[in-house]
Image (cartoon, rainbow, N blue to C red):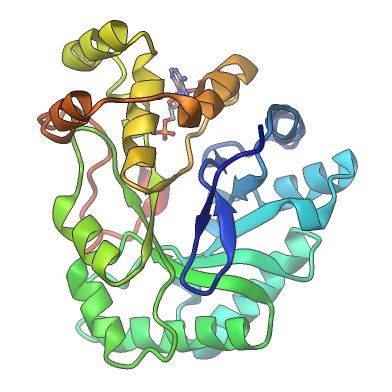
Length: 285
Ligand code: A2P
């Protein structure tokens, strides 16, 4: 059965489960991961300039001969390339690394942190204008942001011609981010859950394990299905083919309302939980 898709406001459709590639930098490992993911049914590959693996992904896709039109390449602009011109130049550079002439999705990876920049609003607005230009010129099929809080989205809304189609944020049981997810739902900004397994840190939580065992699924599947039930696109990361399959199957599971309620109210139990107004040093994570 082919993967369910989520519609963006501009009528671009994305698979609801994609392969997160953060921390996979070794080129040979990338070939293995992409090959296994493709065979399993993954079509969306989530890279970023800050992950230092665009070249590896580009090489893997061309070495494996994957048909470009059948995969979704999602990439992100890093903070060193803020600004109207810089954003466009960075995208063109990334396209070369990825050996492609368009991106399916391009996201502004991090807002300019208000603690670090007095003119954070202006920096974000100018960078976004560059993103919009890339979108208008057809270099990217959809544009969005990551780690944006309501304050960042509100500020961007003052000048944006095209509002973000996606906000990729950390989201999982124990960290439901209710305010921002509700805000995005109202504005038709699709949530992508990064670290949907809490970076692997929440999978040994006793309550999650108990609910998973009762539901006949694994803790990872429970977390992933929770996100999917909320309408989020999920990007779990794993290098293991078995886990890839386990994660991929999660969309076909059923969770009843009581279990969703329990998961919705699970106390914080791990994850990255970074305040994007405080830091922009992704490499320290
Ligand atoms: P590994 O790559 O060794 O499989 P997130 O997607 O939230 O960032 O979580 C990624 C972490 O969770 C990685 O450490 C990954 O480890 C681990 N992981 C991914 N899928 C599973 C799974 N099904 N079961 C247990 N751990 C998993």
